[in-house]
Length: 373
Ligand code: BGC
Ligand code: ZN
Image (cartoon, rainbow, N blue to C red):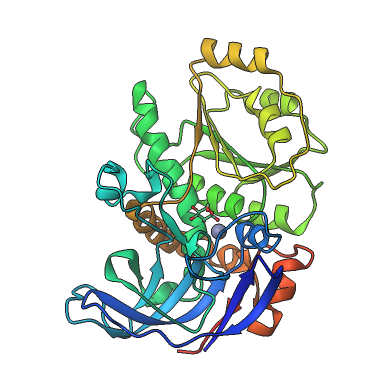
């Protein structure tokens, strides 16, 4: 069967042939890969800046944002059946007995760094026609979400951030007055940095959580992403037209910044205007080589202390974030079906994969079609 792989040694990205996997453990599930999203991480791996093949291989099969259709289950699989739609989790635990995170199914907080990630780190990914995986790493999605379920994995980034944010902000009375019909974050302001898929999906998640939500991104409006964002009630503000200081003047106390640009410069500039008791969440992984920037360290440190601020980094996601992503995606589809659909900017045949992976970045979320149901 076909797969898209990257060979770092040969400096090559493209189509390969590999054997169809078979179920070998009673807890395993086999699925046909319907769609796989392409993200910045995949493009970085294709620039040979990131990622590693599994031990014993020269190549890595790409793909970590997948949607599958179950075709076969092992005898000890209890919650998944043929015909189900599933989204696989990305990370798998390390094998050290003492890694308390991995031993408790929280490899997203692995303490050793020896975890593996499908399609990224030492484990083949999902850009292939059929996959076998353990039931415990698969999340069932309702058929009603089939059309957009490939967005579940990128949405888990925001969901994991939100779970941690609520947890951390319990350090103070951050709860909003109970007001019927309003979601829990309704008295807070959130600024999302970046209008890529992680930013747009993050803005939707903050909006559903009740936050007064803004997207701060480079391009001047009007532009298609600004239009998309405003169609679900989030104001788009261009950093070319509004400086971080003006942004803070405009909005008042910025309670949360959710970074989804992967760039340090604008991030640290916005960190300077984070509000009292605010939390700044990094999700982006800046590309290499890193352009050197200067940071106003003293000003930031002073603010962080005097304003009780938190700076949080977050990577990958656990089962709770996947569950919340599936739940929220359902809400997004009830409220803004057209906006959610248009996050997927294109669906492409495998023959287009190479160009999408190494060519000029375009669109929002580009998706590869792997096999039919
Ligand atoms: C994936 C995460 C992964 C991270 C770092 C992201 O693109 O969504 O699951 O942990 O890359 O490898
Ligand atoms: Zn990704």
